[in-house]
Image 1 (cartoon, protein in one colour):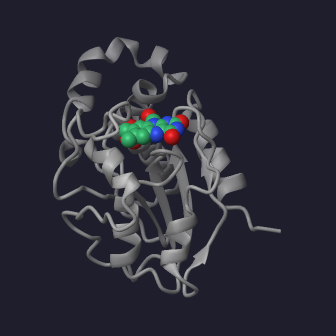
Image 2 (cartoon, rainbow, N blue to C red):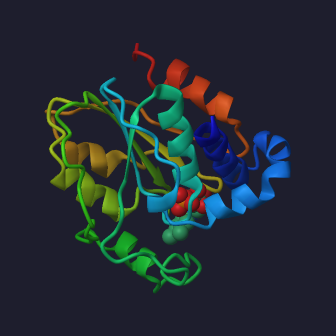
Length: 211
Ligand SMILES: Cc1cc2nc3c(=O)[nH]c(=O)nc-3n(C[C@H](O)[C@H](O)[C@H](O)COP(=O)(O)O)c2cc1C
């Protein structure tokens, strides 16, 4: 129960959702949760239901969404952690020479990932979450798709952004994944969505069979 509350509190902070009010009297717990690095956040246990939520989130928004999705689906959770973490300066998209902006301009940029998931064989479906950078998925997502063995799996991408829609942000990822991967139509998590809305949207739309 504590674990679930902590997850909901993370989402409330990141998305400004309806849980914020309920969590208001738990301020100490919130700050102790949100200020800790991912390794100390409450774990979402990997369940044997064949779904893994893999996400990259240098600034926490996608992480919060991934936690809600994974807990709603009883899925496993894996964070793509860069070998070299992104600093605030690295993420400055107003500076065209910042690390993130330089990476997005470079066709060949493949930022290294600290570790890949140990065993993907028990998962049939990978939900792949990322923030939109310049209308695209960050290049580290290409590193992941090119290095993890996704053959035979279904990949369902999702993103968070300030205002951009999902668009064709997964085009390069889909191409890199190749024909052995069933690539589904992705979607964007709207800012302000509640945990319940996100979980429902994932079940009813993101994971719905395509017509
Ligand atoms: C380098 C960079 C480029 C970005 N480009 C866009 C963009 O093109 N469109 C947009 O709506 N938001 C853009 N954003 C904002 C992020 O997509 C948004 O804040 C996202 O939710 C951050 O996710 P995170 O907290 O998991 O890192 C950009 C952010 C960064 C750091």
